Image (cartoon, rainbow, N blue to C red; front, side):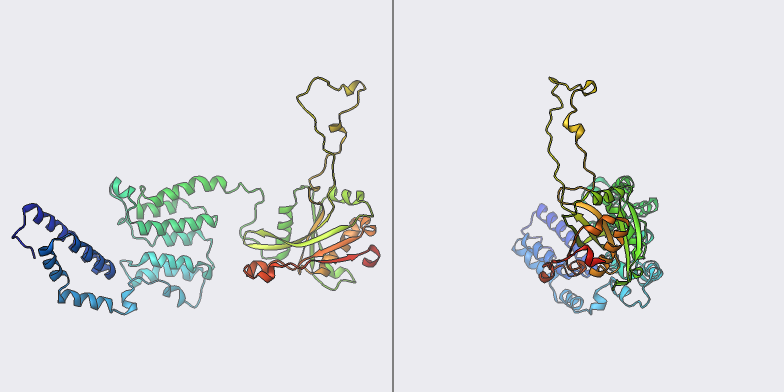
Length: 430
């Protein structure tokens, strides 16, 4: 294999070192079935040799026996070529539930291949089919997924391996699993840390990611002031109450349930959940009769992955005078306790939280069908607790339901919302 003529000792040593590296690399490529990388390495190695060495190198590595082996490996069937089982485990299962998913992770995959070849592809396939099995937010399932990684083999032995991303493809896969947990709001525990430590060690990037999650996620877990139950209730009425409670900033807001069946003239027999505060009832009493109120909607509010449509009864915004006073000016202090006139800032009535810059919110509601008739029934129910609505005209601004916009999102025709104004006087409502 080697030419000793016209070669110095350093050249021969260099060639021996290169041949040894190429032999080890080719051996790994043949075992891992990566024929493309084998060809690339062989062609790169030829460029570093002079003409006599190149002839002998090519005659050895591209000889007929070696080329025959490569052709046999290239012509292997896909079922044999793909050593790692992937999506077939999850596609062939008829009963898709949590127990079956855990059985595939713990028993089926381990019994198919004891040395767990292709475990990275298997983990990506498991993450892909989590929603089909109904386990997208289960911490125990994520533990079993990370437990698929082999133990002890990928732990860095020194500082260089730790800093240069030892087993980078496997660490990327594990970090992807932790990222999906973080996006889903699932906080890891100490048992998951032990699984990561046994697979990648404490000096790996995966364990550093786990440490950051263990530090920040318990701190930010309860930072949301509008906590929702986990899991969310399936009853749409309960979801409507949670949505209205989330949007109403006044703690005195009263949430009431109505049934359109109680009204004789209602065409849509559905449920109605209404939210109104005592301050909003007072605003309706102070509202002038010649100005109309508006019913706008439907709009969307999200409860995690569930959306609810709601309607708002609102009026024109009130304009308050802007009083500009210099609080640091002490040249003329008013002594109103001794008869001097009070400053304007003390005589003006402060606006409530329901009086926004664009509108004054009078009430909010969610209905079972989000139809025009159900909203009209809601206004009729409000008239019982707000008698002033009998003499105030109400204009309906009803748009198309936004549920189709969320589902289709790319259809430009659904983005055009047709606004329909239906004006009714108080006599026609009755």
